[in-house]
Amino acid sequence: MKTSSRMLPLVDWLRPREAAMARLLEQFVRAESPSFDKAAVDHFGRIVAAEWRRRGARVTLVRQRESGDHVRAEWNPRGNRARGQVLVLGHLDTVYRLGTLAGMPFRVSRGRAYGPGAFDMKGGLVIALFAVDTLTATGRLPQKRIVFLWTSDEEIGSGTSRAVIEREARRSDAVLVLEPAAGLDGRVKTGRKGVGEIEIVAKGRAAHAGLNPEDGINAIEEIALQVARISRWNQPSRGITVNAGLVEGGTRTNVIPESARVLVDVRAVRASDMRVLERKFRALRPILRGAKLQIRGGFNRPPMERKSSVALYAKARALAEEMGLSLDEAYVGGGSDGNFTAALGVPTLDGLGAVGEGAHGPNENIVIRALPERAALVASLLASI
Ligand SMILES: [Zn+2]
Image (cartoon, rainbow, N blue to C red):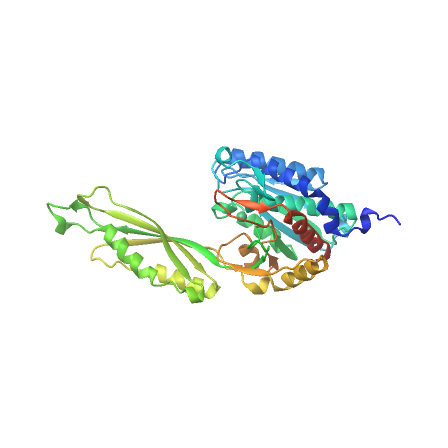
């Protein structure tokens, strides 16, 4: 008896396509797309859009003035018989400045593919395309309309994409996020901390450090005292971190500095802790007599709490098991666009993208052999939600 491709398990259809997946990844990595370079992100977005059009998706660009355009690809093989929507999320942008490729070229070595953005998250974009290919080839068409949303500014806080993401999420029954997996065993992410950035600006009074120091109010000293105070708010066992990550201030050593500032990264596991922390920052008062403080910013990504991932994770685990793969979960401190969708109460599973290591660093790479398995996992989720 002949086996038609319609009877092939998804992963068996994908395995012979591993090299094709790596070639598409190479094409994607070579189109550099730093968040702050609109022209470069748009160029890469057009390459991605063309791949989706080739697969019969209806592609629209969500135009942006400053950042790159977001790419929305709607794949709806059942037309108006579709029942509901699934949102698949990812981003086009990378943290690498234009020209990084020259010193960090795309290369394949010992089963890994290296290059800027290969892991975070161009590998995920490749996985999505091949997931659709295998579903089409094997005739396992999803019941729901699938919207793939590839945004341009995830690495810089999703300022222009957040509203677009939330609008699509509200009309979706589930959200799959193709951000990198955790660890080389490919764990999916079922929880993420809430993330924020707070700026504390101190204003003092300038004076000559030698002639009339008593007239000065040292803004750097004020900031130093505040940093010592907020650092005590760290509670690692509760998942609360407060990190003063950048300080600026002063002009010359013989001048008592008039102004200084610190940027603080804040993270929390619980939404309630997030609110308490924000209130504590707002309540900060100057320590030095005569100094003034301004507090700006706050949490920009709410926590992704595990309860929003539990059901999808159980389903993914069962599907992986059918393919002879094991799948575990991870809780991570980093935020993603999945934080937004989970906070709306829409079931969200994150970390479904590439398996690899070294995100945002010079050795960023993915495990090529895992590409077909990940695409099969995403495809089987799309077919069964
Ligand atoms: Zn990412």
